[in-house]
Structures are given as C-alpha cells and as structure tokens.
Image (cartoon, rainbow, N blue to C red):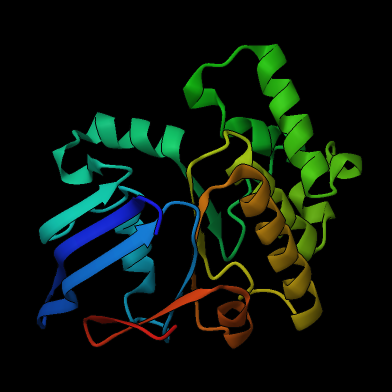
Length: 227
C-alpha cells in the first residue's frame, strides 16, 4: 500500500441544534492511500458531505485528528485553512457552483486567482483544463448557455486547473441523467489518472460506487468499508 494521503483518527463531528446535539460522525478512523479513488456511499444526511468538508478544511471536527498529506488541519489558522484549500483541494459540487456572470474560461481562471500566478500561466492552465474536459469551444459562453453535463465538466475543469493533490466531489452526478452522469464519471477518472490525485466522491448513486475501487458506507455516525 502506498503512503497515506488522508488520515482520520477518532474523528467526531457534532452539530448543536435547538432540539439538542446531533452526532454525525462518531470516533471515525479512515486511511486513504495516495492516488486512490474512493466512494463515500450513503443516503442524504448520512454525513458524506460533512466528511468532505472536514477533508477540505471547510469545517473542523468536534474532536479527533484530520490529516491531509501529513498536515494536521486542526493546527491551521482560518487564513491557513483558506490557503490550504486554494492550493491543495479541488472541489466538484452537485449543482456546479459556477458564477453565472462569468464566462466558462473566467470561472476556471477564478480558481487560480488566490495562487497569484501570472497571466500567461493562468491562461495556459485554463486552456489545458478546458481542453482536458472537451470544452475549449465553450470557453467564452456563460454557464446558462451550457447543458447540465457541460456545466459539470466546466466545474471539473475549474477544480483541476491548479492540479490539486486531492479532488473532492460531492454528488457530482446527482443533477444529471444516467448517460450524462457516465460521461462526467469518465472525465473524473481521466483527470485522476492523468494527475495522480486522490479522488474522493460522496454519492448515493450505485453507478458511482461501481466506478470506484474502494467504497465506504457512511451512516449512523459510522464509516464502514464495503469494498
């Protein structure tokens, strides 16, 4: 087994609601090798997205340790978390999260702005990313002018433009029909293979689970390996 990219040790995440505390993850342990493709399977509200948010330094655990590439995310300041996300994490969301007033090329370019790369390097990264997902001919269009599948491919291009070591996809096929979902999964697999990144997909779709070689079931505060 290769060295771990993701390490969770006794991670608990609680939310405090008006009705009382709710434990979404309860002393969860998880190790994901570098370059693996993993599905987190579970119904809505099971904790899949919460787990992705912990891995992406969007949220912090109530207790326990989350490490990504050896870095303890709990040790980061808010500014450090932002820098970590900008440099190390690519996000792909179910509903794309593209800025409607920006062109597709501008949406992809926006992911590189926090890295302060020069204009030439940024333009080249945008070109390569859009070409990788077959959208160079759509670069100057706006999100509303694209189909759902094209928008999701644009979201993938935005996520991979900085070549992150970790790619997190939250229900990336949830808003797509079966055929389009297959196309998007093919592109995700292609990008993972080309970049060698660690790809983690939260899903309730069995087709996505079949796409990955490692599957965990999330629910009831637990994380159980199924394959």
